[in-house]
Image (cartoon, rainbow, N blue to C red; front, side, top):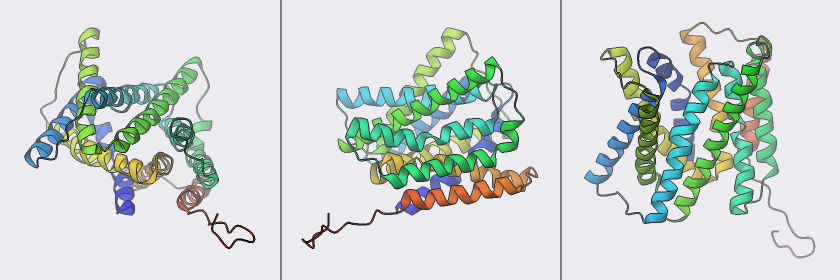
Length: 300
């Protein structure tokens, strides 16, 4: 089950860039995000109400959902999309892939979970691998004040993503399932971003054509309802540090799709990077060997 959820998340999030690219045009980016998570929240609420699976939350649960909505479905998307205007998308992917390491550190700080050495080593290998995959894009970009700003925003987005992971883990420890918390979190995130758009005077335009509506529906159903539910379920089952390795793998899927759809050419450094990413994946999911205490015959 975990493997199916993991592969589903990687495949979905590795292809959402196509839909995001198709969204660019008349509609402002923040407005498109509002449409995405507002509709995804509506779909989740309808599903949960019809199946009578909507869980009742207390005030604490709603406050955590509010914070989760701010981190996962509002600030981080604004940070990444804004950062992409100033730094290459490959560099954004590399910064985002550090979520594996941030999740491991935050799980240690907030939940007292031991940081497994293989997770740190795997995350580091994955990060180096992504660096090789996007090396031509990275070295071809000239440094500037906008570069530093873009890097800062990408890092802030990654930290918000990691914080959202911790909040979801906290909710699941309290018995609340991702379907319910995502429904509320997406609703809160869309509401807060809507207020931002109103304050900034950003018009709520929409393009009534196949390109925009089709890409929006892909982002709503597979990208949000299925993708975020699968991923956050993994956070609860596998731990946030292992689940976050998805952030390393989905750029690899995106590059393979790009090779098919846009003629991306694999190079020797890129292939070496791919090997490192795969090795990192093996390390992250390798179960540590049980140690036997000397003289006792007991597993330590």
